[in-house]
Length: 537
Image (cartoon, rainbow, N blue to C red; front, side, top):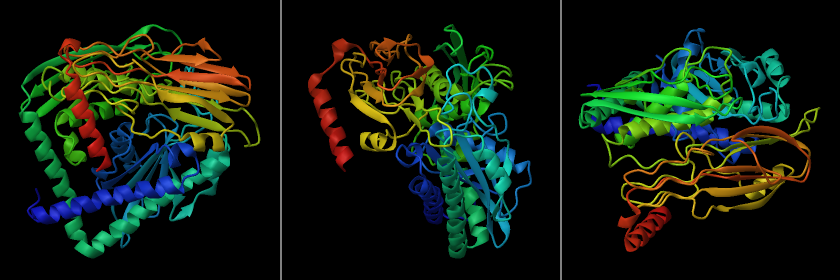
């Protein structure tokens, strides 16, 4: 910890930094136009120091947040100046997948850069071969949407209209995209205002010292947690269920080496990059690793650069998790990230059995429905659908929740039906989908939507063949099912449909934890009562 910052001041300033990030998120959510951001909150915000180190983040989307440092590092190569806002989405230059549009702004106080404000949001459409920009059959990134390397959208405080026109000319629903882009700019501007207030309160030198102090604090806490793990080598393997081009299983292999206060994570043995779009940029793999290690150490440690410093991640170039351009990657961010999470959790099961649950649904169940109408009068609806959380060492898994690398809400039925030509026929928990165990896996859900206009439907899903595994004698959860017009369709599907077609997604349940023979129904009732009380409080 910096000697210039005492413990009390550190705690105050750390919470103030986190409040800046949280307020950025609120500005973004309340200012956005698209339901995917304003209702589902598929966005993230964070604050970085002038060296590009993560200082504080809002608790939004794990796959966004762990990958944000790559975006800032890339923008630093372009000489950012006060008054600039860089926009990017290129997965090979700081992004994750094309729908996730990132804004990076230097935060200046008295004309000098003090840090960077970063917002990332999943836009409902960024062009490409299908409405919603989540095509199941893409073979190269050019089919997935407009590709933006870091470029100044705002320069010297003025919006670059040429860049804005270029962006809007390549997307469906340009008015919605314009509003969401401006919401991200507003979020970053709020960070500059609030950081200026903190400088007025504490002084510039104290704020800079506090950046160092909060990072040192998190690093010290993480290394102390890692020191409690047994030294040794851990390993695990899992598979993806095809890439949208073929149904061949795609292996992901990890070796985790714990040595005192450091962890090395090596993905040697993972499949080479594939023809379809489940390739994942290395930033996505790192993000999944960081998420798991936070879970198996202490999730209450403030997330910042200090949490990541003791962790090294190695991924072979040209592999599924570190592809070369022009690989298609839109499914890597949403689906492959989930499998990386599963496989790294599995590797830690022996070293930290009291922290590792059974496998959850292991998919985001991406559903995209949109029209090909011209003139900007069409629609694009995107949603990730909840499922079962794996049984825990001491409690049942949670029912109908987002699992792993996503942390979004659902689109409320009222908002969905008001905004789109869609009608929700069924939405509820999927009975008996959780794996049996001493602690049962959480239940998946059933979401059935009738499309009331001609449209294109894209599904990017997993765990349709390989079930979420139980642990310690627990049984596997149920696999998911996708139906279009009553027909069971593959995990990764894009199809044009006529008005009146029903699309149903039955999501996987979580695996069970412990032998079903050891289940105590009375203890389960007490646990559920306690959880309801905690929720009400």
